[in-house]
Image (cartoon, rainbow, N blue to C red):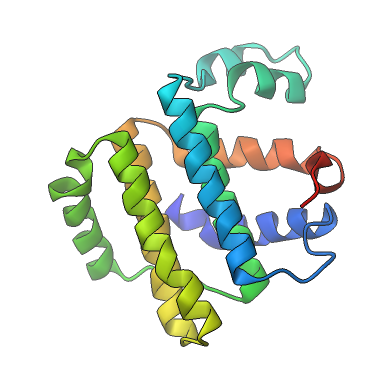
Length: 193
């Protein structure tokens, strides 16, 4: 996933634009709440023990893609965590954020994950993610430097990457599948915003 961040940002932002999500200007808080709502949907999927079945998805090649996605992936924990990333990628495109990828800091975050976050329950991990996201709103509305925002978004995306590894799923695969599904959907995916 880490090597595809620039590609994912461009693709998520372009899809959001072409589907009407940026027809009107929205605030940082509006967009961040949509990110946080995806975290909540992941928690609900976990509470219901709904997980994707990538093997089943791959085996049913003869079935139309959208239906296959709905049958084997949609609304699962993995799908909702991919949605969190896609919303963040869209925000990166919208606000011109370039998440950092500094090697030493990544190792520190991995160690933090293994020593602290990895021992938490799913809901505690979700809450920790929301706590990482919260400073973004105040930082962005207070015109914090792009460098600081790049750092915050980079930290959040690496957190999600390690979260997915801890949960045992291929985050990049799920992002790819959800992006492909989103590209086939209608205007604002049939929603108000």
